[in-house]
Image 1 (cartoon, rainbow, N blue to C red):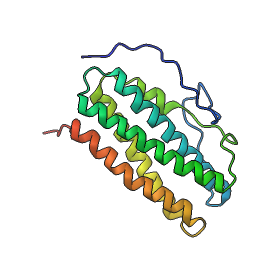
Image 2 (spheres, rainbow, N blue to C red; image 1 turned 180 degrees about the vertical axis):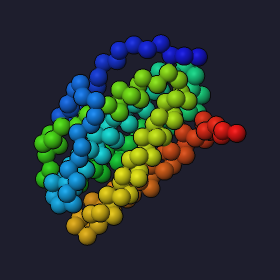
Image 3 (cartoon, rainbow, N blue to C red; image 1 turned 45 degrees about the vertical axis):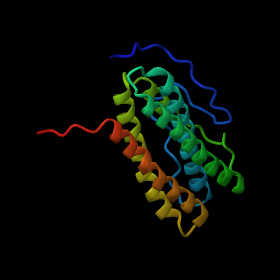
Image 4 (cartoon, rainbow, N blue to C red; image 1 turned 30 degrees about the vertical axis):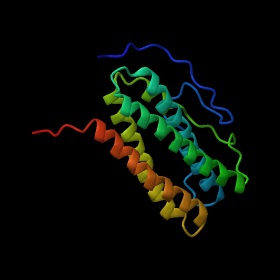
Length: 177
């Protein structure tokens, strides 16, 4: 059953500074120093905010989602919020301004355009997979510069793997013959 597409009001993303009407998210600063770590923390934190909002939104907007899947989405929203607090806590410890650099809500818009629960699960799993790989790589890159931020990124990556598995448990990928 296809979902009717309509224009969604965008959540209030405060205190993040969101660049609207852009097609590609601002690239994070790649330097392994303070600015680079801060920008990666900011980018990851905003991805967690969008994922939390999207999971909660999905519980109300996909009539084809089983009750168990909806409950799983609520639990995942709480996990995303936990990750957000870890990242924001680290930003606070490092005195990093959340609004110093812009972020993009492209992830939110792409997730809320999914037509059904299966598409949403697979799209979210793809985003989580990309975030997991990036978090693992970045954790290794900054390990000597900032071991505490590396630990946070590494732990989030570990936990995101269970989010990915959940999506495919409800909607396995079809194998091509």
